[in-house]
Each structure stands twice: as C-alpha cells, then as structure tokens.
Length: 465
Image 1 (tube, rainbow, N blue to C red):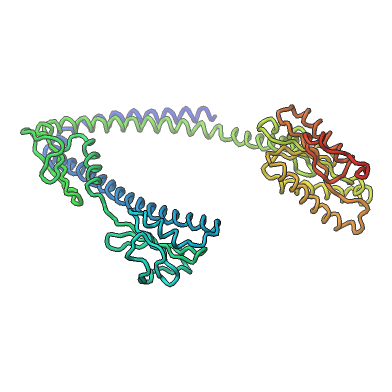
Image 2 (image 1 turned 90 degrees about the vertical axis):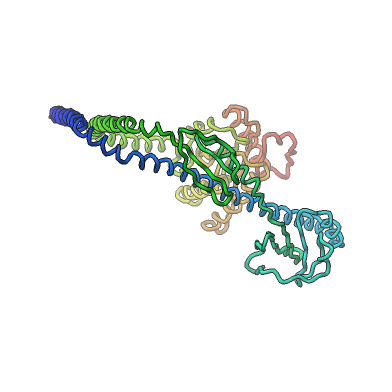
C-alpha cells in the first residue's frame, strides 16, 4: 500500500516538473523581445549605478580600516602608559621587599632617566615627590578627577595628551603617567593607499597626484572622495561594455531559467528524501530505545551498585585510556568492627559516605571499589597532596563514627598503599600497592605508605598492633 502511494506521488510530481519546465521555456521565448527593449532603456543607469555601488563599497571598506587603525593607535598608547605604570609599581614592590628607606630619592634618580613618558609620583596631598621633570618637584598639582574609593585607575584625554592616573595603596601614592598623542596620519594614509593599490581597475589620486592607474580615451570616469585623508578613488567605464550589456543580461535570464529548473529538481529530490525519512523515523526511534537500554546495561556492568564507583572491570577499562602518576589501594580500618557491632545497614552507609569523600577529594581521578572495604584510585596528584587528603578523610570518618558510636572501641580510618612505578601493568601495580598497604596495617593504621619508601621505614615493636 505504502509503495503504491509513493509511486503515485512520484508520478504526479514528475509530471509537474516536466510541465513547469516547458512552461518556463515557452514564457521565456515570448518575453525575450520585451525584456530586451526594457533593458536597452535602463542599461546605462543600471551600469552606472553598479559602478557607483562598487566605489561606495570601497569607501566603506577604507573607512572601516581607517577607524581600526585609529583605535589601534589609542590602544597602543594606553598599553604604553600601563606598562610604564606597572614598571614603577614593580620597582616600589622591590624596594618594599628590600626595606629600602630612601624610596623617593631612588625614584627621583630613576625617573630622570625616562624621556619618552612623563611620570609624576605624588603623595595623598597631591604633592610631587618624584618626577622625570625637574620643574614639577615640590610643586602642588591640581587634584586629579579620580575617586580612588570607587576606582583605583582612571584615564584622561586632554588636548593632545593621554594621562593615566593610578592609586597605589601599598605606599599611599598616586602615579600620574602621561604621553603626548601624536597620530601618525601619514603612516595611516600609507597603509590605506597600499590597500587601495591592491584593488583592481581603479585610479587613486592623493592631493592631485596620480598614485595608481592611467586614463584611457575610450573610457569615461567617475570619482568618490575619502574625505578624512583627501584621497580620490576613481573607476573607468568602457563604452563598449555598455554595448555588451544586452548580451550579458540575456545570459543572466538564461541562468535564471536554469536555476528555476534546478530548484524544481531539488524540490523533487527533497520530497523523495522526506518520504524515506518518514519511513525510517519509526526504525530510528526504536534504535534510540535500544541504545538507551544498552547504555543502562553498560552502567550496571562497570559501576558498583552500592557506592556508584567503578567496579573492577570498569576501572581496568578506563585505566588503559590515560597515564597516571600513582596507583593507590585503600582499606577501611576496623570496618569489620562496625559491621559486627552496628549491623550491615550502618556498614553500607559508611561505605557510601566514604565513597563520597573519595569523590570529593579526588574529583578528577579514577576511583573504583575493588571489593568489600577495599578501594582503588589512580591519580596524578602530588605525594604531599595525597597524604593531606587522607588525613582530612580520616578526620571526617571519625566524625561519622561518633554519630552512631558514642564510645568507640576501635577507630574507623583508612590505610593506604601507593604504587609509584606507574609504567608497570595493573596487576604489578596492585601487588606493589598491596605490599605497601600490608606494611601500613602491620605498623600503624590510618597512614599512607608509598612503595618506594618501604626500604627506608623501620618497623618498631612499639608500633605494632
């Protein structure tokens, strides 16, 4: 049934396409003469407007480049001021660290060597204490228009000068940095003219001086002025091009017809595609359901149900995908005491809380439950950071235990063995970590021991439990 309906739709649409094609060709042949007459009347205006639009586009592009160059100059001036201000701040910080008392004398000597940027250093009474301009020394300046309670830095543009005023609270000083703005118009004009030279078929005049192009007796010319720099941009129009316009328009009309036919073909193909999409959408929805079920099944196979951590299989699979610095085997000390004394429900809650603590302290690391009260972690954290994390976790475990065990006979804590040669296979790393964990359990529980440190640790009798 569906196949028959589809065939009928294809037949109807194919008939429509064929009819539209012949109709378009027929209309074109009837309207061709009328179109040519209209074009002959307006071709001159059309052609000239096209050239003016081209010139207008050039002017707009040059204006954008001009504004960009002006902004770049302003930003470079501001960066220059900020760099000089930061340079003074760094000197002040250095003098502070060295506890150098004659700060103003040092700055006075230093600033006098700076010639390009005018810098004055004032106290809170706006009195100059250091400057590279001898005339400013001990001369009171007008209070700068800056509210240092709201903003510790402000920028002022006055006449041809840019001033950056910065409050430096460490010394209660005001740094006034300024530079004369000299806009290099000639450099900007050179850049603009270089851009224009790369454009084809134009003539460039700068102050009645021909920069690019030449005149042709078979052309007439139109000009536009880029006023900020007084550059004239012109374009020549060949008389013979106007005569060719009729033929070009005919080609354009033919292109329109071809495009119309192509549109019909495109719509035809699109309808066929939509038809097949409707057929396969049902199958796609079923595949999505199947994919979700497979994802749920995968999560069940790689995650521990109680703690939501990776199980052995999930840990081993992800461990291969990334290099880690350390591999840890963690054991909950005296967990059997918790289970035997308070029951497995409390024990399960402890395991879940412990798993949450591991996630909290080792967020970006690989964490898994090996089985029972044994857990595994692969990490790139530093040795000291690992040790500190487990100290924090042990404190938290003690708080958790006291909530249900008011008078604990045995303390809940973690013992950790760490394998340090991460280039070994996972089985070898587990053996090394297990040996380090064994040493911890035999000496003093609640500690972290790295496998490479085992040979340097002496096991005293008083430490044995």
